[in-house]
Amino acid sequence: MPQSTGNTKRAPVFKRIAQILTHTPPYCSGTLSVDKNDLLLFYVNDSGDARRIDFGNISNEELKHLSETCEQATFGRNQESVLDEQYRKSRKLDSTQFVPYLDVNNLKFTDILHEDLLPDGQRDKNIRIERYKLNVYEPGSFFKPHVDTPRGEDMFGSLVIVFPTPHEGGGFVLRDKNKEWTIDAASEMKSMSGPCITYIAFYGDVEHEVLPITAGYRVTITYNLYFDSKPIPPYSKISDDSFQQLWVAFEEMLADPFILPDGGYLGFGLRRQYGLSHTTKLDALSENLKGGDALLMQVCRDLSLDASLRALYYSCEDYDFEKPDDILVDRIPNLQGYYIDSISAALVDECPGALRVARSLSIDFDDRESEIDPDIIIKWVVRDRKNGEVTQDIVTYGNEPSMDKVYGEVCLIVAVGPPQDRRDTKKIKTFMELYESRSKSKSKSRSKSKSKFRAEYESDSDPETDADMEGTSCFQVEM
Ligand SMILES: O=C(O)CCC(=O)C(=O)O
Ligand SMILES: [Fe+2]
Image (tube, rainbow, N blue to C red):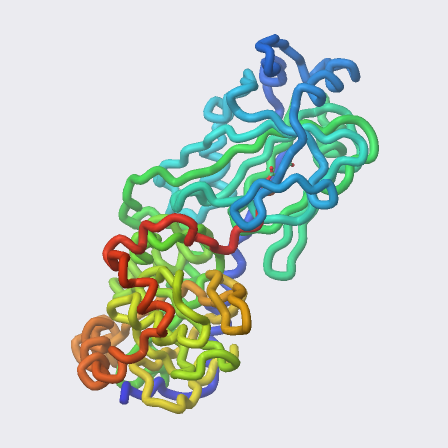
């Protein structure tokens, strides 16, 4: 049986840590004065006719022509491009058909993002801004709430630039963790005297919406934001307030002798969501964390704590007859071919090192009793099932095969020693040791746990390459 997690009440310092991690804003926006040439745009239609327009001085006919050159915008639903005017009514041009004179690098957008969106610890991290689409909204156009499709694991967000064409309506609404912000670019730009643009940059998992345009034309360019693959630099120059506060709260938590008196595992559910696929090793995600999650990782590294990213999959009491445990894994498993009634067993089969966690379905912060001996007990510091969520489609049982979803969440597990030396983790088991001690005691029952369906499915497939199979990645993507 793993060590005790100490007192079962939620420590006040846990609440403070949760508040600091949630506090970092998920977006930044502003209106910038620009050079008058920055309002020029070149575009071309399908027959190769090119035009130059100036958003600083543009007629309705020109805007109409631009709109007519665009095609009707689709959006992504379950990996398909769907045309649905109930959901998105606007027009768009692909990046190969237009070139703005405006250069986001000249306008120092990477500096703006470092200053206003990313935590200070990511200040030296390279950002790549990739031009994506031009959107035209005429009266009656809108784009209902959605999150943008992540295009790669290093994509962390989106940037929208709104040109100063006179229009009404078209407010840009962002929603995150029960908060809501509206940016009315049209009225912000009206109050500026010279050429200007409005920008909005936000993390990719933030829900956003374009409200209906009631008059005029609203024209935007969207950009995808990526972290370049340079490693995170050392954190010696960090001066960020939230970083300092979190660091102090961590020190206080680690000094508390009632929290994990024998050492053990602290759990932090991630605050943001990430585009993940079966090929994602969760530890690699640590270089691409966003907002409060990046802050958390920085503080753990700064304090030389042993921190690992894991995914926690919830068991489903309704279905999982075999062993209704929550399972902690180090990668996103490929669940294709498994039935929903054997998810715990499937996770154990798919992920070397999978651990059964003391039941954690409820979001109270106390430890829960498990019906079986768990492999690991986690003291949850921050927990909210909706954050860091991963979902996957899976076959359900029935008279006909149908699909359901399996839910999990990405979390950071910090192994700590006893209060005298939290960095001394020699007395507690590593994930691998925990796994090995379980697999020794349970190896017999495990080999029987594969579902029949999976056994048949596997007969002509190579388990080593399963992770690369097509059509299996379906994760939290709505745009
Ligand atoms: O045009 C805008 O303001 C936003 C467009 C958008 O959200 C998108 O293309 O995903
Ligand atoms: Fe979007």
